[in-house]
Every structure is written in structure tokens, then in C-alpha cells.
Length: 133
Image (cartoon, rainbow, N blue to C red; front, side, top):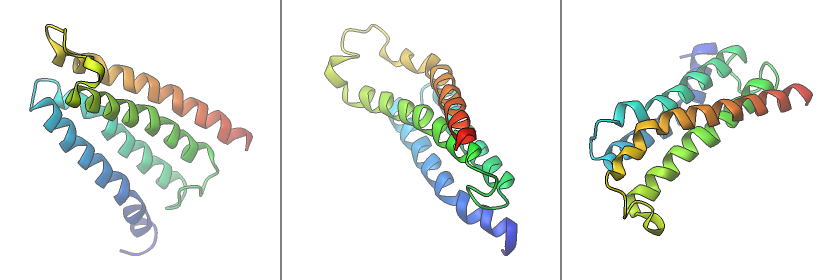
């Protein structure tokens, strides 16, 4: 692969690998429950946003300015970070967070909505900061 397609492929590969690893871990923590596919949507959106960033940048992260890269980072930190942190907290029952709950696995029912909203806010903040830089 040469040129634009090769640049996008190689620069997108770390994002895809991290997203796939996160997806497998989400599945392990939820033990294949009914909300696994729903919780894979925010990481998949990260891959799509990263691809759009690279596409608009001509195969480089900051090829078209800093708006999209900062927006992508702004989405990734709350969306992927919050999701993985809550899955970690669930897996180790952090501070007995889920000990008294009747249905502790239902935390994953609405988690994708929360993480996508937080990611959207992070994307908007990154976009605004990238505009002013």
C-alpha cells in the first residue's frame, strides 16, 4: 500500500487494535450479556471518527488543522475511558459499588448513551480548542 491509503491504514491501525482489545475485554467483563453489542458502539464510533480525521487530513492526523485531531482525542478520552473505567469498576466491584444492587449488570444498559454524550461534549471542546489554535 502506497500513498494515501497506506498512510490511513498504518495510522489507523493502533486505534483499531486498541478498540478491538477493548471490545474483547468488554465482552469478558459482561460475560456475553445482553448489552455487549450496545457497549461496543462508542468504541466503534471512535474508529469512524479517527478514519474521518485521517481522511480529511490527507492521511496525516493534523493534515487539515487541529480541529479534528483534538476533537477525536476529546471524544476518545470520555467515551472509551469512561466505558473502560466503569467496566473495570464492575469487574473488581470497586468500593463495593455493585455489592448491594439487585441487578448490577444493568449498569451497562444505558452506559453507551452516557459515554457517547460525554464523548460528544469532549469532541466539541476539542473542536473549539482546535479552532482557536
